[in-house]
Image (cartoon, rainbow, N blue to C red):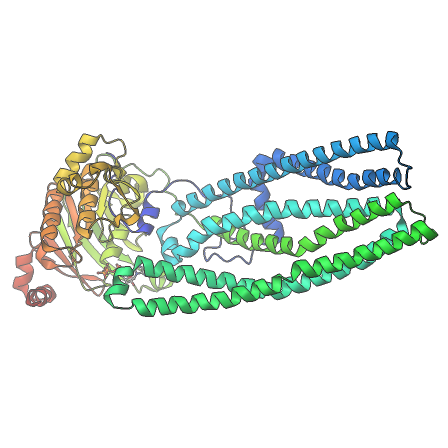
Length: 624
Ligand SMILES: Nc1ncnc2c1ncn2[C@@H]1O[C@H](COP(=O)(O)OP(=O)(O)OP(=O)(O)O)[C@@H](O)[C@H]1O
């Protein structure tokens, strides 16, 4: 039987159902609370290198090319100096000696540029490859995690780990490190060249450089706070905008547009203030470090001139002074950039910790050894003394949300679940699909304890239509064929006809090829529901789990949806979570859940005659 997980489902249910992939190697202590404290810099670096490993050749090559490029750039000032020494006096230019120096200089410039470009290309490629691999693992992980984990963590945060944090790791750790590395090579190289030309002048450069570092780090320190605040406000602003755009109807219905715009403007103004402050402070960075650099440059020039004229503190030629001045510039550049690079690397480390904490979370418990496949399911379902609590501590103390749940659905029967909000109806379905495991008793499908069946085959026996319809960005046909991608167009159309969706689909601009946006925004709630029913019809599961959606659709569409539901349920075992009692009067059995137990059970007539909670509920809805 094809996979009928074709229904509408909440994002977490979809994540939990379409599973695959395995968890990566475990880090320190599998932090299910996503705690990052156990991740030291060494652990993070080792893990990142684990991802870089398969592309190690490009990393090594990039580093070597970087070294070559930096060394050539450092060699150029020597050649310039040599050239200058050939043209020191009027009419005393030694062209014969100058020509080979210029040729060498041109060759050095070309090779330095080429190696620099190639190193940059390799580093970027490496970063993208690593980001791709990390993201695949992180996304696989989301599918391998148990639903309890997904439920317990903010979806936005999980998403941010898979999308933003992975990018930060790529940008910061790889590119930041490369920059750091070439900075170190530049500093070491310039020092070596300077000391080889004149030790005393080199000592002067080394002594005055801390001035430049001090100024750069002071400015970074003051602007960092403002940039942090700016990032926070940007997040708040986009979060607010997203919330308001996705709930625009409600905002309008409550007449809150003006208030919304006001609130948005408030955050926006705050962002403006912080942004201007951040830019104001950081705009000092360039001029002031340049000023300091120029002071250092001037000092070196003065010392150099003194060396040429007086031979103090050492003897230098004019060309050598020129080389020195170039080195002074090159030597100071990495110091000016270092604080930005360090911030980038720190951010990347923070992101890597968050990412690895997610990758190390405990996967859904694997299927029991020797778990059987549920082949050709008949659709018999039984709950035997089932008890469950979400809270593990409460479960251990015996304080259960659901307890002593006992019922048996023969193949083809239609059962309904009724009860006050929060009584555990959805929980019961979560248990049936093994998104959570029972704490007491057992659930039997076709004579087998569900814990002895593979999750995949168990879940494949069910089709779900939930109240939150789920359509993805794609054509109508793709959406219907979600649970059976190999279905022909005729089969898709047939399923749509049986779901009473065909009529409205053919009226859409491109019929079955009409692209529906994410969430099916251009369709009505009822139409979305009909498409989800068609999806389950096509997948043809043995057991249906239906969460009636009757709240947000008009009466005519509601009748169509109800008809489609009825047709879909024919000959299949079905469990309906009922909100409106008028729709379940024909159910073979209605289970009334109250205070975690089955309080009443029977047909509609039996329950009415009994005059209990159901009868009261029915009368109150009827009165409405
Ligand atoms: N993932 C979860 N973790 C912890 N508690 C949960 C979780 N999901 C639901 N609950 C709690 O369990 C109880 C039962 O929730 P459930 O969703 O099963 O109720 P329901 O009967 O389907 O409600 P409704 O009719 O409003 O949909 C509620 O108190 C709810 O807050």
